[in-house]
Image (cartoon, rainbow, N blue to C red; front, side, top):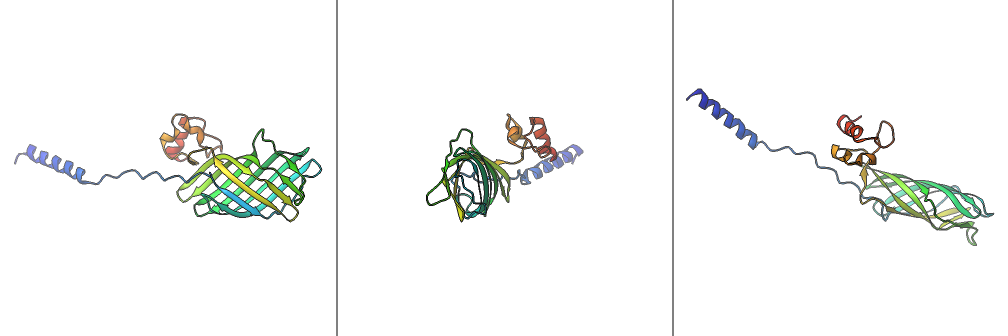
Length: 219
């Protein structure tokens, strides 16, 4: 058998062996957890009762209770606001949901231009009409950390010295949650880098190049 023929047979054998090796595909992309749409927080327990009688003052609550919806479990929440001339003019809140589906931590702020009335009640120390808050949330699951944002409705909020009756619902502005950090170069393209926060600065990535650098190097 000639040397050329033997070399040809070796090359053919190597080629055949490569064809028989199972292809190793990339790891599948984890399915993101659902957004907070249809989440309901309900509780009646307050550590910080307050009243808005007298036209001006402050109102606050610190509650814990039951969460139902995509993240069914338990929750804790705090909120505080400023009442001016009988109207709630500023309000901020935080919430944490502990559920089998994941841990949700979020912040809420009074939506601009939302008229909210706070007045003295008959059976309650004060009543705050239902009001809209903008929320931002971080959802941590076994497959990763994701972000969500949208609108929440709190109230009507009944506050009395013995406790606060809290109901809060959520409607996401996103069709799906977004990974808190980019996991592929493609997620940095077409301006999408701005959706993610740069762990180095805590602010959105400044450009596609910096986003891609993080994906490649992890820092």
